[in-house]
Image (cartoon, rainbow, N blue to C red; front, side):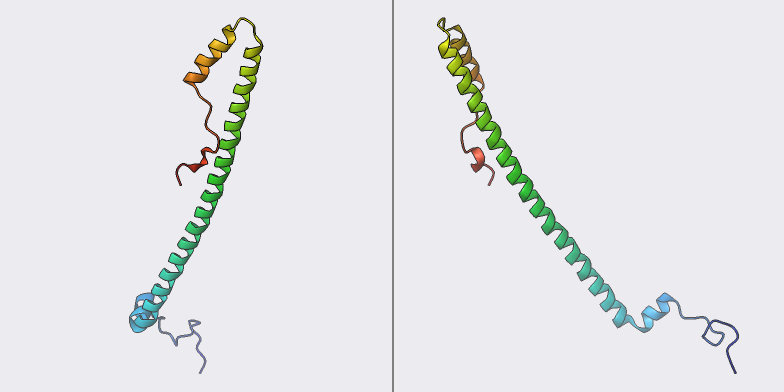
Length: 114
């Protein structure tokens, strides 16, 4: 005779998750271990890409620092040339005091923090 209850289990309730887990505990332990390994792999992959992005950002910042250092040195040189053209020497002495207090960064300053 056909089952008319519609549940497909002959009128019985299907076993719950805990009952299935108790019955097939080896499979559930294996599933949780595999899921854990998968999640750790995803986390490791994300960290790998984040490190690569940070390396790219660091390289970009170093290049920008070198460009700004070069620009500051060029500006100081141009100001010194203009001050040397002044016959009174007042501008040159003033610039020497300013540049002594705020020196331009040295060339090739990317060797720090490696």
